[in-house]
Image 1 (tube, rainbow, N blue to C red):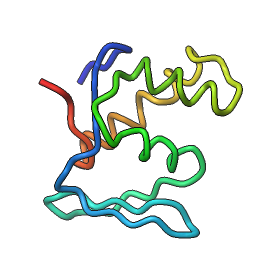
Image 2 (cartoon, one colour; image 1 turned 90 degrees about the horizontal axis):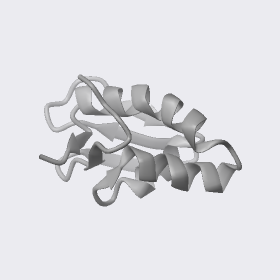
Image 3 (cartoon, rainbow, N blue to C red; image 1 turned 90 degrees about the vertical axis):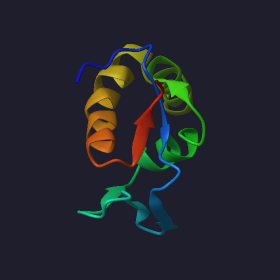
Image 4 (cartoon, rainbow, N blue to C red; image 1 turned 120 degrees about the horizontal axis):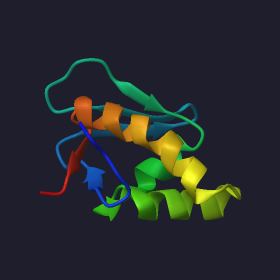
Length: 93
């Protein structure tokens, strides 16, 4: 799967999730292993409430944490790939 800054994703409407002191735990619609999002994963999950490009996500997170958007994008891609593989988020078609 090839992701770039223009790919738009959102959380899957059929994903089950709960927020707690430990972060956000998400389970895809087909079950499997839950995914725990802690630290910056929590605001990422909040931002995935609507379709956003990876570039926009990187920009918003970089502003919140004072990091370079390009570096954030590099870190973001494998997380989004994992979330897509677990069906907890979806690509816009």
